[in-house]
Image (tube, rainbow, N blue to C red):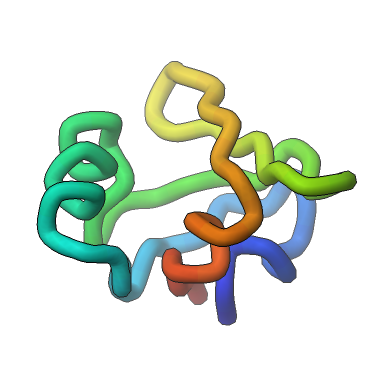
Length: 70
């Protein structure tokens, strides 16, 4: 499922990131990569706020739709 519809406050495993190479590398540097874990804190409005490792990140909805979790 895309990150935008992931349940709130539940640790999810990243399956794949379907963004272009430059964006995917940037997300990997932030800790969002296949096999990693993210926790959605909020998905109201046009952005998704998630916890990756010890950091909170805000992703716009279009980018969050390209990150698939299980």
